[in-house]
Length: 264
Image (cartoon, rainbow, N blue to C red; front, side):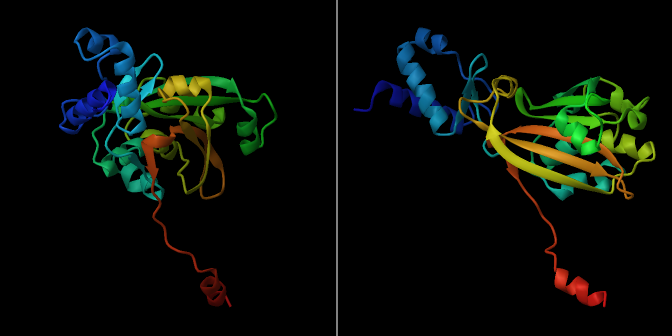
């Protein structure tokens, strides 16, 4: 006979697969299942740990056990920055990812905190600033429903964004088209950018903020955004829950030999 925790795990797994628990929904607290006669505290705990190891749920201290979305979100590459999306429309980058993933979204799933700060070392180095120079920090937490997916903090030179919607702390993107549209309207049309990605263990604060299960890593993003004359208008640092995104890039394959031949 299978142990009681296995029977309970299989029962809950069936409920998840039938849609009785939706992606992002919290499972009952352990004590609720104990009181409902599903087993002892250790039995329910073991069942929940099995569901987590099988990828059906995530658990984190203080946030309970949540049904994992069926597939990670697509985190688009160059397509998420298509000017048609934000200059001519209202599809800011995180919304472009949701649309590509076939997932719903609300604009207020992005919250933000804006303030003047002393530039952190990586920001000062990117801009070529003296240590301690003040920059604007626009820190966002993005959620899918109640589930945090990532943080993104953009750093701007005050002379570029002072008086614009980029320093407005209201929840949601900075108006129609978001931050890139604000820069565009201020005369700073983005032309090219560099993204660097690396994986690392989450800090304790990141685990709490993103509601990460024990041991989950994050993917850190550094994004440098430039105008056509190579003026950097944004440096951003993102921290993404490792299991909640699939990174997708679609780009032409370069042929440097062909370019050299054409220039002769």
